Image 1 (cartoon, rainbow, N blue to C red):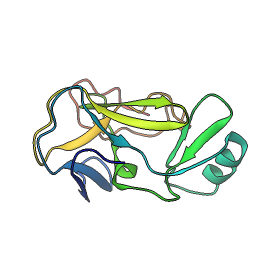
Image 2: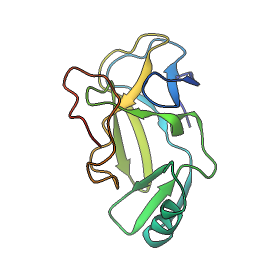
Image 3: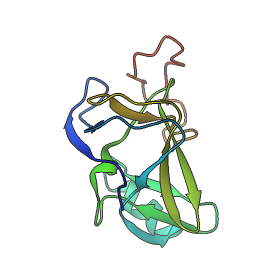
Length: 133
């Protein structure tokens, strides 16, 4: 369930992004990432077959495949200076605002460690960009 109105549009960071359709106050839950909860083994098999991975591993043997039954939050891009954070709890992925987000602003979060192992160039454009995911 998405608790604030958002929309998908072309992103300056990468492909499609998620944008606020209204002002979002700081420290508010924006919504849950849609998807299918699957085993970690199945998640890694699926990820190996696609270029654009939309997978979140929970650390308990399960993962969320956001390419199946997705919602608008599936397109939330990475930034080294994010305005949101991701919280994984009870096999759910929640996105929360770190600071006030303006209407029309792109929502971003720091993905943390990824399967790219520091080899995918980061295109977030932040002043503190680390250069790779």
